Length: 196
Image (cartoon, rainbow, N blue to C red; front, side):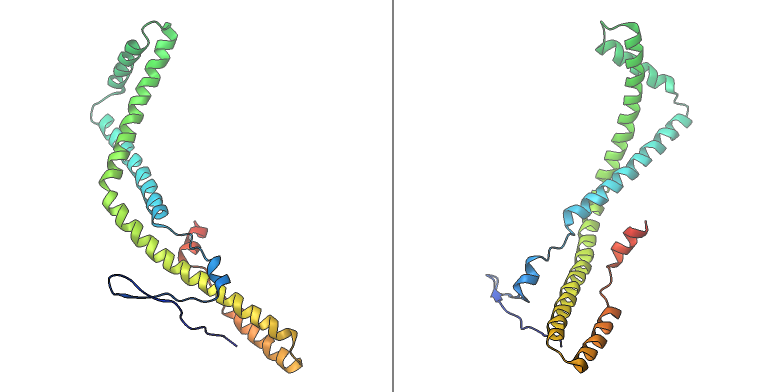
């Protein structure tokens, strides 16, 4: 039999708005931590946006090279950097540093494009991060509370089964089978992450 507990702890804040806090059993609330946070969702979005920005930077670099700009310009800039920074180095080291400097310049261009793309998309990241965090945390709260209620029901059924006769045990077995058929499902976003 499902035991429904009353709502406790009605709090009033300074603004005069009622704030009700449902309180089930103390042991259930102590271990319920929702793993979804706004910061984590924003970080995921920022990371994916930066990676998209790097792709945008590579595309821009390819377009620049298609437009008549050649690698010789980059190589010349790399040689100038190597000559300036490694004046007393051996010739082989200067050549190697010229190539490294040229690739460093290309990487700076691509990284700069990724950074600018991410800055441009920041308001969207902030908004979608809040929205995703809200919907995912709401789904996780339902999932966590459903698991706690299921655990509580199974505990109550176990306690009843210890002192039950055969007819009550048969009825408890039917209730257990019904409970297993309506088992708490994972939230949709967790199923999507497992597929990919």
